[in-house]
Length: 105
Image (tube, rainbow, N blue to C red; front, side, top):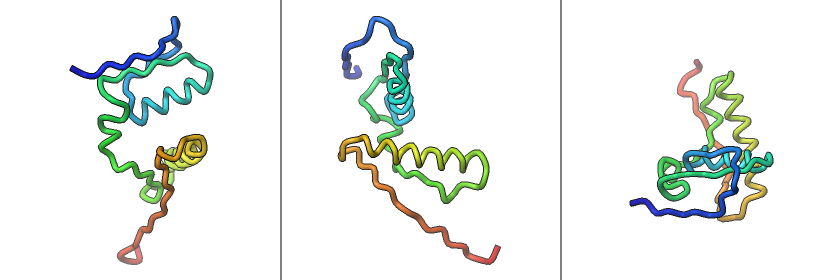
């Protein structure tokens, strides 16, 4: 049976976020920052599923021009801004990358 953790839940909620992975946590963070009363529900620990098993890389160099690149650039900016507000154990480490062309095309 999953561990149950219940903290203070307001009498009225504006949003209930299902999943405490990176997407759910981000939704809850920005909704709370906007003044909404939010609850996050997950069957396991925070980042205990797919988020915790992933590499955690933020890639921009592999995106073609268009909506996906636009979202990747926005995400990179938001992560950089968020990292300034988080404690060091959040482990945000911006890194570069190199893409090598094997031929002229």
